Amino acid sequence: MTKKDTNRMLADIEMEVEYTRTMIGKNALDPRVMEAMRSVPRDAFVPPELKPFAFDNGPLPIGHGQTISQPYIVALMTDLVQPAPEHTVLEIGTGSGYQTAILSQLVKQVYTMEVVPALAKAARELFGALHYNNIENRIGNGYEGWPEHAPYDGIIVTAAATHIPQPLIEQLKPGGRLIIPVGLPYSHQDLMLLEKNHAGEIHSQNVLGVAFVPLREENPQPDRDQTLH
Ligand code: SAH
Image (cartoon, rainbow, N blue to C red; front, side, top):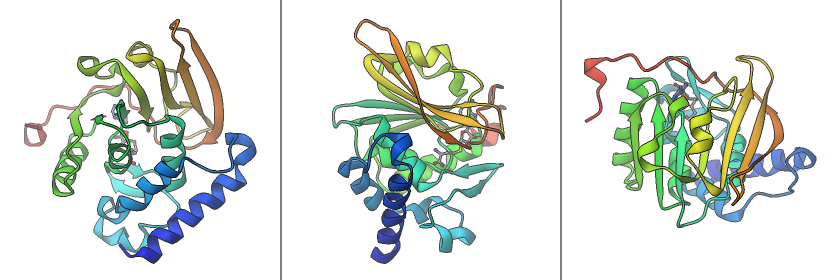
């Protein structure tokens, strides 16, 4: 990764924030989030043949029919969850692990779940190699969340759900935020922000139209070779 590549990626994110400012309700993202986007090497999270495009502001295929999300969307979702150094955050849809790595720079602990065993395994190896030590990941169906470590200050879902999973609402702390794309698979989806207030009431708002791969409803396929230890 060169400084020039990262500067270009950051400039492209800033430009898209500017274009979408009326929808997202802000002119700029949290400087801490932009700093995390600067420090995590996106090229480490894309397949070798796509490394020349690693700093383009677009999604890229990562195998298994999945994608690494667009940098602007990663930055926006991270900003919306309002990460703080003492926070514990849950991510659904580890994929390449890029969004996870960004979060790990901004909060105390990140838990992340992935339904495709091979992706979960590759991400775990990468977190180790890059010394991101405040991440725990496992194979699992994100619709159920990860109750053992709940409640969470923030939850980010990086695949499109047809409805908001009730377990995720339950696993959110009062004062916590859930960011989730909701809509039909391969069709229009709304990026939604749900806030749970201290009385436990949920307030939701639509932030932006987005296009994510679908959140799968089936449980992970057991595969002895892909078990995480
Ligand atoms: N955050 C990832 C985005 C990957 S795309 C990144 O930046 O690379 C969404 C991911 O969600 C895919 O890897 C997909 O396999 C995973 N996914 C889909 N349905 C899921 C489910 N029910 N539970 C957990 N992960 C799921």
